[in-house]
Image (tube, rainbow, N blue to C red):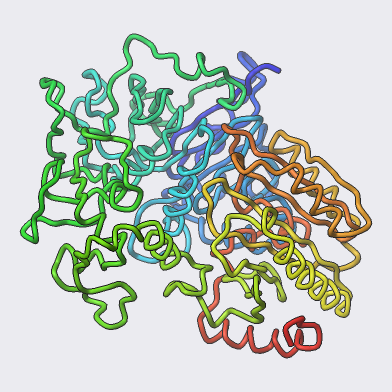
Length: 604
């Protein structure tokens, strides 16, 4: 198959007549193109263009090809986007965007989706502390992209509204950027994210100019990144606002093609090593950049200094928590072995660095240095304990939301999720910190079967069927099997909608039909490879759909939830962050569920 053909566009500012006239012209001369991706402000900046804009939104004017936007701010944005959020016709998955009208899709918050084989990640809106309903991104949106960066595979396109701070560092001089300040209309959070995600192409707007930077190499990745800043539609300087691109999806490329570099490739603009020296010591970062902040967390300047590498001001938390750092001796931050030793023994890191902890008695870590050499033999146990303290699902963790627990067995417990998709959405979670429910012992499997049977009977009593699904990340996070009730009338459509979603992502499920749930899970154990990520769903009639996720494949962590949100016509709830409740509401939800489930609970 030929590579997809994509048009990229800068700030539209509501000028849809001009945009789509140009799109049709380009499509006729060089097309056909598959989609338009718009960055920067999409809505008008004055009410004068609102009628023109609404002609397209309300269907009086035609949008020629699928158009996706992330600049969800400007005149009329709140009204249009609120209607899109509540529209029951939004049956698509979050990865595809919310449908505003025919061929127009809003990419809300942050996320990633597959577009004609391309992995597309996005951060919608601008950074703001004003708490606006639309037009800004939240810390949750940023954290979701950080989690994406940890997954295998390569992102082809990364869309942001504003430029990353420092993108012109190490770049050749460009006449187009003369007089343009790098500190205005730039975002240091975007710098951090792009340094972590390492996309092949990064596209941004909001700067008012066109700028195609030379490709730059990435830290700890073989491929290069190309940054493209696009000018606004109809700008008076007649700078380029639309750009055609036809990249081959990284998932289909060979290792040699992925690692290919052109002669004008520069160093990454987000690392600040001294090019004039071959010394292994790193130079300090410019004060206006925080692009390395994913590597450090603790400022130890003017505090208890210890020996170590780096520039002496901050500790490298990647080293503290994992024992290694991808940057090695070139890391800008300190690799403090003593601090790591104390952390493995359960000592509070704030206490290690500051000599005190602001949490006081509420802190679950030790507030004294552990110097007994005999404790070194217990490092792995202490490391495991620390891991449990950080895990949301470990019962011994201070982070566990214990008020959501509804039933506890010997090997498994049940809890209601934060941000449930529907009423009676349940998580079945191993008590032990294990990465999946497939490779557990026979005793564990029997108890899991009892929980599943109880939930199926409970749902059946309400005229509903159970859908179970699990996403197994090879990163080894705490396993959880999700149980979602669906109306019996929709049970026959579940397999079709999962297959449709798989087709959109470019893969096919392996389907296994069995009369017993235990038989289906036995087949899963035969397919499972602990060196790969894995997704499966158990359907009401006994069929099990499974997919082994390839090394470079981008697979949405919330895939199962997003598909069921589409089936149930509640696309706005595909993102659990849209469904979060207060603690009082959660507590009442748990109490009500326990009363209804009591007769079916295998532990009663």
